[in-house]
Length: 198
Ligand SMILES: [Fe+2]
Ligand SMILES: [Fe+2]
Image (cartoon, rainbow, N blue to C red; front, top):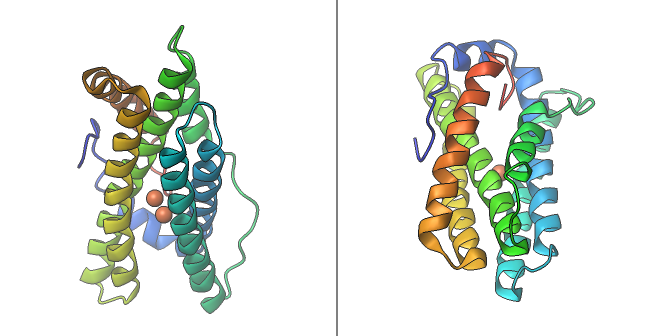
């Protein structure tokens, strides 16, 4: 799927659906983090105003996703609970930051690419959930179907924004391939847990 180098373990969707309260609460936290990350990157120097505007619009959409997942939790009387420590996202940002000397444009482009990879992984997993739910005739499948399409769009949008910031498309594509290999190794190491990125 997209640029991912390591496919999710086929057991993951079954495991995640067996623990729906944990999965949905984790998913809600992920949407909030996506919104907050997009909003924070929108004001990060040296983002051009057009890029800042696109990131603010992305933050609004992620906020709508957050509210939609909160409504699903509410419907099922599942508490939101505390956010888990997000080792996956933290490790990805660390990998991007540890890439040596970079221009401010290059560092911002890397942060956008890390965001794009998180979108790609969510997108892959929402597809698996949508299919597993549809096979059970569960209406939640349509919800994940919609989110799958949104995350696929976000992946492309964030890669395009990284190119706009860096203004060197071949370099950005090369960085994306490098970070995607690191993301694949990380996903393989994390094993199978009932969370969106676990
Ligand atoms: Fe989202
Ligand atoms: Fe997204």
